[in-house]
Image (cartoon, rainbow, N blue to C red):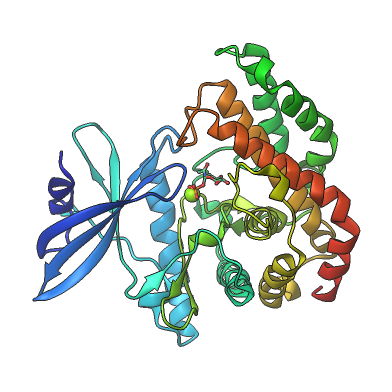
Length: 363
Ligand code: GN1
Ligand code: MG
């Protein structure tokens, strides 16, 4: 089916003009659709949900509709314009929030937030602080939302113990005979295992509150007003699930406070930028600090190390298994991603005291 045919199955009316693929995201495929409706040119965001990552796209959409409806109500209560602050998924003509094409692939369509942008990376500390505020606000909005209402769209998504098990299995099976090429990286990651799984052990012992978390807090998952750089809606809600606050904090820091992008092949440039670290921390904790338990506060930086190492094991396991999960742009892309995250985890260990000092200012 063509993109135009898929669009015609959504209840959006108007006349299709054009589409362009956005090269963002390692999992789903995203297209911007130009439409004319009521004489006005409009844009929508069409996405194909990756069935390999999300085994049950209907449950993903059920979660998203529930979460966005809830956040929309909270946003309206706060007197904020919900059209700009909350994603809205269109229904298909059959009333469902998705369309299934001839291949059995699932598509969804969001309203495009007018005059908005996302940043794949930025050095602007004001934007970084606003990313922190946006994810913090999102977390606050979902405070009263019961986690039991959500499907687990990817089981054990941030269960780092389980992620290490998958990593061990990939090394053992080594189906593409690649392990010998990445011995150094394998050794390094295994040396991190004890420390990187500590957060999960704390979680398993029941000492940390389970919240509804975003679980993919990259800075390009927040939209901004093009003119004012005000943070608007939080995007990419596929992995909103029960989780730990340290996962969201850690994932955001590992992405936004890295001096370079997460797949920069020049590993010598990878390091934690203290100013970026501080800007995000200020924005995020300004919103959530009041609701955190003492142990949650103590585990925030452990979350940075944990998620960085966890993602490195995911990238490397994917390389060993034949690059089937994350989209790769060139052979060995997943290896550079791995090296980059390992370098970041090593810098974290070096700078930990200084990071703890900065963090303390906002706790
Ligand atoms: C994937 O969808 P995207 O590109 O924002 C991945 C995240 C990783 C991220 C690394 C469902 O996120 O867990 O942190 O790549 N999402 C899924 O860039 O696996
Ligand atoms: Mg995602």
